[in-house]
Length: 90
Image (tube, rainbow, N blue to C red; front, side, top):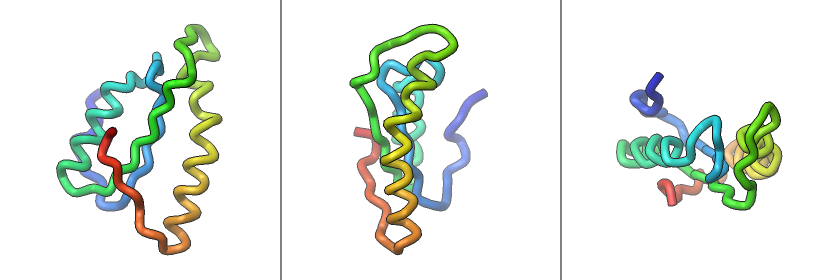
């Protein structure tokens, strides 16, 4: 399945581990860049601190926890009327 063809009409927060074995960072970054290029406000948070870990509790699962704090603050700010930051896939 290919992602990123439908452009969101609302701001988007994406978080990805650079060593993610489940959702490769290059693909996530490409989706973010495509959406940015089509006018969506995108903030991509990349985490390079989590090492590549294989198995049932891999990098993909572990990357959720650091992203939880950032995503919670991101949605809190949107609900407070603060404009969404844009970094268009650093």
